Amino acid sequence: MTNQTNIISVVIPCRNEELYIQQCVNSVRRFIIPENYQIEILLLDGNSFDKTIEIIKKLQEEDSSIKLISNNEIYQSFAINKALQFAKGEWIMRLDAHSIYPKNYLKLCLETALRTKADNVGGLFITLPGGDSIQAKLVQALTTHKFGVGDAGFRTGEKEESIVDTVPYGFFKRSLFEKIGLLDERLIRAQDYEFNRRISSNGGKVWRNSEILVYYHNQPDLISFYKKQFYKEAPYNAYLWYVAPYAFAIRHAITGVFAGGIIIGGFLAIFFTAIKFLYFSILGLYFLLSFLSAIQQAVRYKQIKYILMLPPCFFLYHFIHGIGVIVGVFKLLTKTAPVQKDKIPWKGAENFYQDKAKNLVLPRI
Image 1 (cartoon, rainbow, N blue to C red):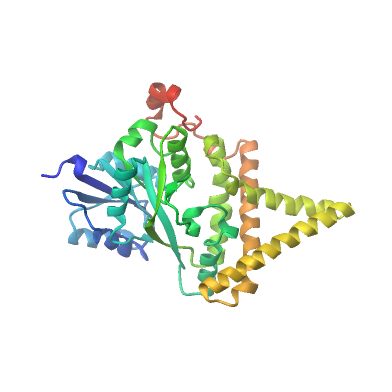
Image 2 (cartoon, rainbow, N blue to C red):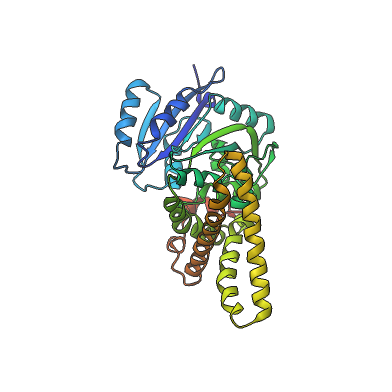
């Protein structure tokens, strides 16, 4: 009989994922299951109003290991924390409904975790366009080059196997949450990154095995992509630094410096010749690098038109993200940031902090 130590709980938060949820779950059902192990699939639905729940219920008729759990708080951090109340396994595999997973995904995660003794294990994103349009393909190109996303190695395909700052999603032992706490529910974005940096800050290991692959669908058009950067990704980078100073990363801040430099430098260049020369020199270097990066992506994806289309797209990506970071910092300074309204990172955190705060690096309360 399989006991708790032989169960792997696959946790998938979802909301309005009618386009992807079936292929996501079916890819999980095709996992190679190591001998003497079994899996359960927990789908945490955040009040979907499309056909997501209907699709999940049909999948449940085919597979009794699939469980549907309501996540009325909607966001992913709440979903993961809630799943721990229902999960039967010693191992927790956190996945995303917007992705597809190869058959060997679970097998490689388990083997890597056992071999390296790492606290969290993951791999690389293989970014897929969110549609057939040229805009969807441009989003793919923007997010798969170092010029676009900096040193986020899991996005750009760095091949070495090593300790890293973060990995996509995560494969953990359940006991890790008992040791360092749950996900910070104040963070509706960047909660995975904070948790990974918390692992490292407390002496743990986050390990990337480049053989572990995630096929991730990006946004279907540039407007959706840029809106996500401005309203979610960028400001929550700033909020992340407030609740978890140990999670600061230069790649998350550099766009704020860039956008601030564009605005302030452009204003000062009107009045000072030396600044004007420096301003346009730096701007020229930026567009030279973006042009060279565009050529690389044009060759990579066999799209010659990327050479002219990507430089302005790179600029908008970095500028819009940077403005979002600045807005996030402004809200923190004016004490209007959403993370400042609730000081408790998760339900029951008060007792956890009383017991362990002196010995651990934890989010600010």
